[in-house]
Amino acid sequence: MPHVKLGAALDLSRFHQAFTPRALREDPLVLKAEECYLSSHGRLLLVECVSVEGHLRQGFFVVAFSADGETVVRLSPRTHPEKTDGVLRCVAWVAGWLRSFQPEAESRTTNIATHLARPFPPESTAP
Image (cartoon, rainbow, N blue to C red; front, top):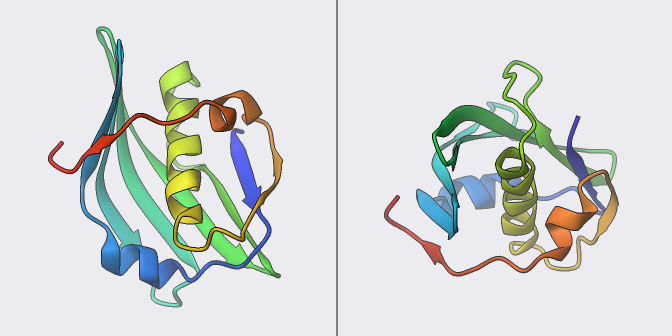
């Protein structure tokens, strides 16, 4: 399962409050973050995402949860998209976006390092 572990328990409610839908375009790939949901206890966040790669369009959730001094970002186990470059890139995008709220939270472990290493192009806030 694609994932990124960040070295801090992030305040997910800050991300949730600041969330605005956005899109990322990397020809021929388009990623969208459409909605964001925060659990009642504030330690679990769902980001509803869409990946469009040519004719393949996939909807899925990226989940982030904070506990024990770290935050894990991964695909939701309740969604089963094909693990394409776009889906993996989307997990990396959400992890980077979360890190922007607490830059000292460095990536500890991941199985999508190549997707994290590539810089992200500018985002659009109107997907």
